[in-house]
Image (cartoon, rainbow, N blue to C red; front, side, top):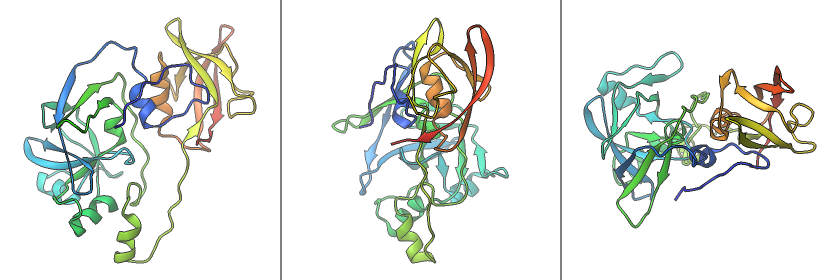
Length: 275
């Protein structure tokens, strides 16, 4: 069960799915939805969804998937086409239990995890897609495996779309499927980045309270700085900072608007390697 309460300050500020989805603990409580689920034969969490009024269709929840994926065969059946980057926006995407996602963007693709399980029948049911980070990180999920429903609670803000190129980004079975279907390909894994700072919410904004000596932000940020925006998007909470930086990996540069001694300035920090 992915359930965590993350409170600022956070030394070595890490950006990953669980903190991004949990850091809004101090925000006003949002409406909760009870979403029925069951486990597939492979012990994946399976939920059912109606898309544009049709269905229901079977989706697995995968915290390792960067995005919502919808199988290409289902997309054709629904008459939905992707843009040049491979993304599509659905007018209506409703999870069983009445939770209506707000026009979510999805990749129309057949990642190897999905393709592999459908080819082999491992899941015991036909799978039509994967619900990943760009949806899950917008909610606080509470899962009790002794019950048949999980709780979804909407968080403030919106997670930016990740950059995805080609297949193989979410494939727990990728090596197996590639071995069956063609030449083996090399995958490169990059660690999530970190800033190496301690943040706190102060006077309605986000303040730097400490900077890790020798860390990525050393020499760029200092205690007392106020972070007003990340990538030109204003922030007021540590949770918002998590969400904006979460898709970035080591080596990426994060642009920040910082207020120091009353002066507003733009700075860049190259993220270091996370754990």
